[in-house]
Length: 487
Image 1 (cartoon, rainbow, N blue to C red):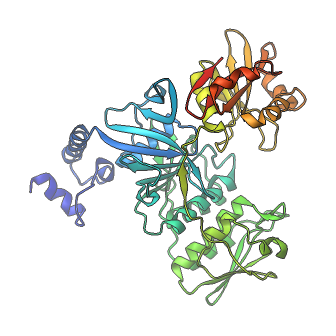
Image 2 (image 1 turned 180 degrees about the vertical axis):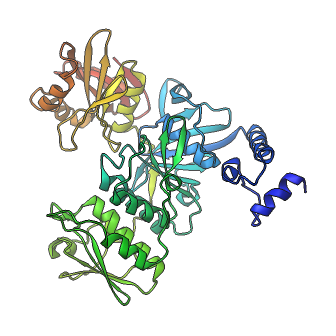
Image 3 (image 1 turned 90 degrees about the vertical axis):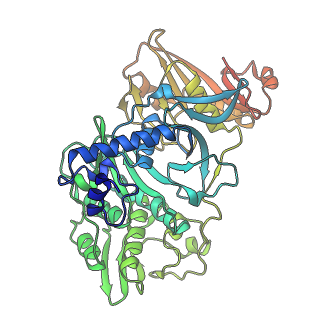
């Protein structure tokens, strides 16, 4: 054993395999020369394994910044990666779209595929090797959820709503060895965190989830930055929640302990269903964390707002998946039957879908994308030169893609549809339907000409001629074989 390993073993008696520069950076007693030897070893390892195959599954539009962070999580090195959008390529083989992306990297052979999640699925999964349709989800090495929200813009959805996805993963794969990562892909600044965010982050820490945000050229460990500690027992969990200031007019989430029985009040209802997402995340977290500290715990939910008729339908709701195998009752309601966990966590998208069509068009079109609303992907806001300038509401009528050409002073509004829904797509491009959205587009581009068109998924590209006289032209078409036409 050489001197480097001997020194490291003093600080990591459990073994030095996997010990990296990042893990040693705050250990000042480890000499700088040894820390830099670890970097040398890492580079040597990467060089020797540069053809290692990785596969990434995502429900989102593949984003190079998120891919970079995902790779850093895999390597356990949290310094910003140098891959750019030029390294991320939509795979077109024999002039056909394959539904995959390739990342050009000196370290790995990386393929990205779209997935379709069942219930509360995270944004990214990273695997070693290639994947076919019979892959084992439990083999994932990194599980990553990403969001643009921050504590100042959205206190509840910023943390609480994200917890549900990790609880769902833990329920489906209790023996998973994957790294669980929450990534905030916007800077947080140096402001003091609100109590709701601090409490939610303590829940994350307790559940073994790591949290980071990006700042300049590096990734900031949120738990280290804000000195976030996990809960040590159920009393800490209860005390921390009950001490938070109540907001007038709200049913604040509160917890009362009576022996092994825990009474939790909090609204779960929204529009007559269990769909209050922040409280779903918070209450299911409380239940699972308290259960971790007290295996004999039972729970009663009060002031939840749910009616008997809704539960009688045995709704396949993510809240029930999150409290699976825990003794939970609802005040004033009799639970006849609860839904089972989904049989599968996700599947690889193999078909040529409307979602793949609109994403492919947005990548093949050379104009700037200033808004996108691809199926199953995060809704963006309207941007200008990459900077968001106008918010778009979840319930607002909106198209699927908006392109901008500043040279020609043109805005192109695109609606994506499958072939059988073309008439619906035409209606959704009308000025009346998109009036509020177009008004927002024109705020900073009043002199621009607006063009409208369709992006379609069609059975066979040879039949495209049938639609040449539509009210709005077909700007992009993708058929089931991967053949495509761009106007």
